[in-house]
Image (cartoon, rainbow, N blue to C red):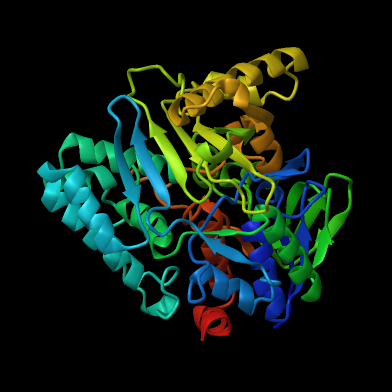
Length: 485
């Protein structure tokens, strides 16, 4: 039966959920608080250089990959062009104090050989780790769409953390720390708490195919815009949701916007940070326990990005470099790790240095996200924070700091304005072994959650969550069959 659907939030998950539901005949209204669709992925330009905030590279973009097949089937690909990152190794981990390195390749056999060479005392754990990656790549529908969703059987328990798995198989602390910190940079959860299942899904997606899109997130946002228009999705920009409307029977009936306009809908899909949804619901339509559980969800750490230009041939063009400083060194205080992301392949030569700000206390996160903070104080804070990144990049790549021109930064305040996530969390809520997973179904009839907070972070995680949510709204065989069979 055709229904009217309101999708709150036009990020990756919102766009794909809207496209699936429209493709299956529903009338869809896509609501976005900002002026553009996919605000985080879109990024921005400075001096004609693309500052790519949310889509530096991704998995699942090869011809048989989940993300590409999904976008093509929905008409959202729109002739996007991809370029593979260096197949010899797309992510280079570097320990600056010791000079040690580890290169992640597009091949499970090569990765196993490199782990055995770098961590010989943890050989059993290294082999078991690569085995877990292989099994995840083969048996997970979102990595191997030839496996129907209803036949999925994860080989890994969501209750086992990455660190516990490695220690159980005899890993020494150096391997545990290496893989834990690498994962934390990719999805924002420490190794001691991240489910092995999620870690393997994220890492395996890159090993299967690590690609960038020519034109970056900006090109992806354009493709989404054109595709949704072709599907007849009504896109309402600068339409912030004030309240999710619930009738006397406890069922969703629409969305009230901040400007007073009311959007009637029998189904509402909320794609923002789950902790913000209870504030949009009338009191009493859910239990206090459910409300408190969402409101108290722990967020992933905020991210600070410095976008630079320069460096000539000393900076890598098709490879990401992660500098893992010792936690005691203070060299990159208050963070301890820095990702230098390859330049977006659009011929303009910009690149970003991304620091995960895990060292910030909760009160400091609130401070840097405070929209009432005086501009002078905020600008001073950004300038100091950016200098840490620039100094670390220059020292590692043998540059003089003046050779790197800072184009702009993306601070936690910017991330909060794009996603409305508490504290500017770029990866949404944490998925941990000690926190029950948030389900897409809610206690309110017709109200569903979607987004990277539910299944896995990033573009792939958000897209997979949208598919799963639509399977709950309709049914798995209808949705999966339309997309992949």
